[in-house]
Length: 595
Image (cartoon, rainbow, N blue to C red; front, side, top):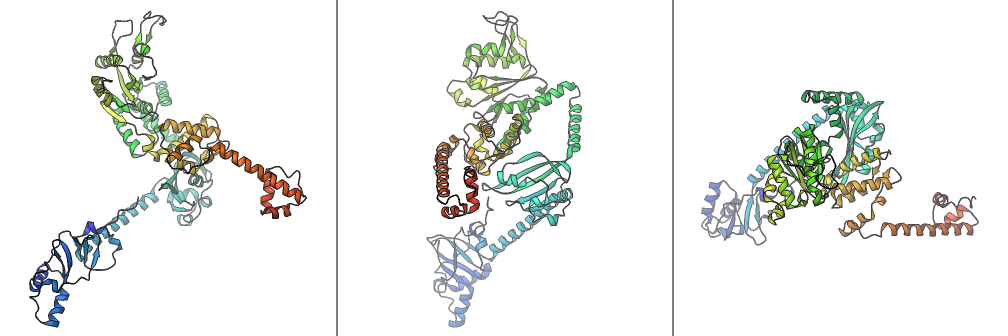
């Protein structure tokens, strides 16, 4: 974003004193003296006629004697600088006295030495404040415990702090201006510059020391302008110490938990840190969710399909008082109406044909002392809504076929991708239940509103996929990442995850290129005008194959014509000998032509 520039409109005097053209010169002279001004605009009906200057009055009197009873119109001048109110002050080079008017000549204000002096005073203060801030940034950067370095788009080091200098054994001044690969062992900053995907919490060996590092690309105007490298932990020892301190913290806060319970909790829990992204939209949603987790209030999560509503629900559960209990998830849209009641409330033995002989606990019972998450609550029938309302009011359930109320303690979190307010208005959702659910609403933004989070999500998912498929972590092409920014992702996070897995599985090498982009994404981007109309991937591959066959045949015919003389063939084809040798090898023609 470009810095806001000061314009004439912001600083001009919009209510200047003006002179009537019929005013006599001696009256105008008194006015100039009283105001301590050397010039004033002459106007009539708000329109600018000219400028009356003290200097012109003095000249008139010296040359023609006392003419002070003449009208101002006879002494004023039309020679002055006229400005537009949108003129940028930094573009003004001369002093003093500027008149500001519109195209019709209407006076809008004046810009005198007084206004310009105030402007330059504020400008000086801003510069001083910026200089002080830069000193603070420099101080923090150099005294940070973590090693920090920043490279430009070419991989050349621009910033290098004392901590990093200690790690690599290269003085700060010697490192700045050098390519990162010449200073940092095994650096992957050039890879991050190429892919645009952050590499967070990565193991790295530097000068024989094991470290955990972050490598973060720096984006500006949809272009990578550099990357930052951060050394986080010094080897396994420091990481283990952090884990031990966290375990001690948990023991102090939850001393009544058994070790096994803590272990199970840590294995299954989803934390807010697991919800990837730091854009304002998702950060605000996480902020509200964290506050909701510290309460016992009912939470209603809204958002489009695929935005991660259940992930938010789990994070709230595991961050709240209900974390000792189970998290029970129910997709209301996936359960047939006839089975909904028995699924939610359970049933007694012999309640209906095919029922379990011992009966079965319902989802609400299973969520006792825990959390029940009712997803797609907007798809629930009005009849079931009434039953849910009663359970919420009484905190009791009755199994189907039974008459014994079962008291329960649970937290309720619901979610929907529908507009419940409109459904209440249309009579499709109970108003009393709506207000029971709508205590703490959390709206999860769609991916198209937080595209800056895409690189973080991609980096995390690619690491997950590498573990699942027991493969090396793959990188992704920067051009492909840019196109992902331009796509609107109607399927949100779920769609992005699915596409990443497809790309990971179908890419043979360790770098996912632009050519791996799914064909439907090409079509969608063409519709949006992001990509120029291109042939389908299948058609392009066919054309490339045909071109290769034609080239192969041409080389073969030329070699036959010159009886296998490769130097002569290269001249006839208009290519270098090295190029010809490469193509002969690619098309396996070298076994026929060895001369």
